[in-house]
Amino acid sequence: MCIGIPMRVLRIEPGHALCAGRGEQRRVRTALVGEVAVDDWLLVFIDSAQDRLDAPRAAEIDATLDLLEAAAAGRSTETEAAFELPSRIGKAQLLALTGAQCLP
Image 1 (tube, rainbow, N blue to C red):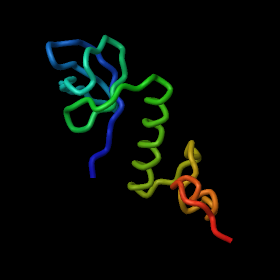
Image 2 (tube, rainbow, N blue to C red):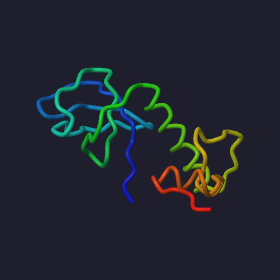
Image 3 (cartoon, rainbow, N blue to C red):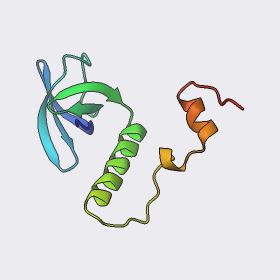
């Protein structure tokens, strides 16, 4: 499984950017997102930027990754996810999210 990491651009190089996020720095390919600027947020998979993010979306993804990390480590957390898990969604709402209609 590949998880996208939100990373902030620190420095620009031709075709690449030095980015920081989640306690690390990476040299990231930027070919798929075009020109970037210092302080832009990118969604990075391995060492390639796949999408541009705004700061609030980057923070939301970071918070979700924190929750996943805590769950994987067996730590409980007081923080609630900013979304409903599929296991907590009713059948009609889940069907609506998939574009299906609820039959009587």
